[in-house]
Image: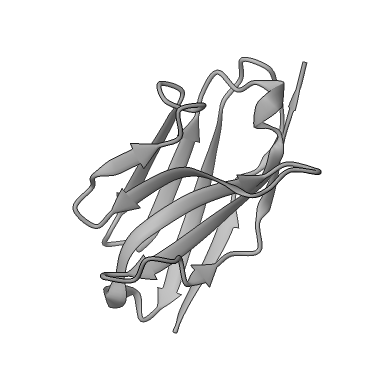
Length: 118
């Protein structure tokens, strides 16, 4: 089993920055991808970014150029650097992990609130 715990959320003004962290524990050697998702009130959960063990990344169009996903495989921690935040970025952000060859993300954190004020 793998456990993931997010941290780093908070309240920030539009144009500001935050960095989220996602610490993984347990059978971390099995983790291939770590993903960041978010869910705003009244909206469906959406994917924000994915980073694989190789370091390759993909991003949602809405965050390209503003958010950067990274990971430290030694510390088993993933990061999401969020710059130029907008009120529309307000949501609960979740970290998730999956093993190689598994399509759906299997292990989820509890979420961390990000609120961007205008």
